[in-house]
Length: 483
Image 1 (cartoon, rainbow, N blue to C red):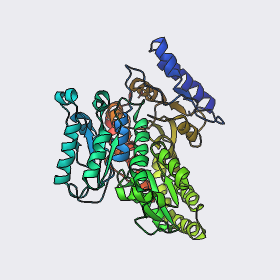
Image 2 (cartoon, one colour):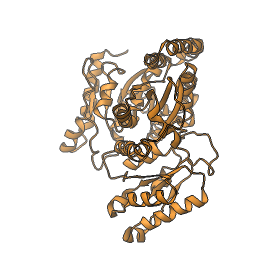
Image 3 (spheres, one colour):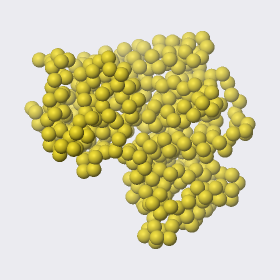
Image 4 (cartoon, rainbow, N blue to C red):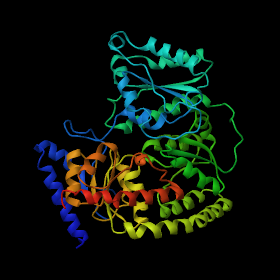
């Protein structure tokens, strides 16, 4: 028997209370502010966010280095990104996000390669500036087709006071003005990877845009130029989105930053509109371009046909009738295909419940895709969300949805045990915990080695994957704890 909304709210409050009882009083008081139930009509989700995780709990967050190197800068394919510090950070972040790109690896593209300064004890004692200079010289000899270098600082660099800015300026002059960007993204900065996004955005502003000021555009602009911002081409997502934008008559002049290049970053201030996918990681540079260059920006959501249609029309509203007609043409073209996908998978998935815990925009953006298949998201939360993320989430979640910010490993397991969803969508650290519990799971950071999930083509893959996870016969061989 299904519960009423009021019964769901009461159950969620009891569940939160039960979870908090295991903590010391001070910790319980702090964590209580991050857990709640969404009340329809409220301006946000009623939870606190973007504050330091409590020491001793199993947080699922990353660090500022992860936000800069792993998210924003790392996918820029024709630049070499040096993980400056001990080898571990570069090794752990090495090609982990499946940022697809076109090019010849090791010749003109370098995304899946690791470049590290491999700090040793002597580098901590005597400093690593000379070592960094040597690395840049070696890069110029071994990889002459690289179009630029970034220095992604790890924790020791900030602690010992190395001057990566001076090294970058010196080497840029030696290499005839090559773009070399020092990024102060030491992992101890901020409370999560979110500050790393912000720092990386600021370095693009300061070391790429400012360098181009006053120089002529490298291409001839058109009235229909747009830039895709905050799509990292995980599993080919940006390509699936680009297809739709181009089919409606727009010209995509840049992808930030999946399959992107330094030239595309430099050209972006000439765009007529920035279309923003991941608000959390790229709203900073979008706001800067609006203020300095007068480029408007609009958020879009290409998960599931309902949100795709709304987003295409919203993007088209910034252009003339030619693009508006193009949007309707694209929507009509794919409607039959989408109807067939829904007809195939909705009977198998309708009524199934989902709990999400992801980063970026996914805790809200993917909800529409699940609902297109007749599924219901009963719990969601952000690893590193800010208050404005939870404000945006109110447009997606239903009354009574369980909300959890920076959820701990213990809390998430207990929530799943009591809510008993049919599917959990989270990250690699959670995947095997829930599968061993007998709960179907999809890795919603990098699509469990599948994808793309964006666009019309991506929705067909998304629907197949959710069906494959939930209705896999393997679950008949094991049992969830509550069964």
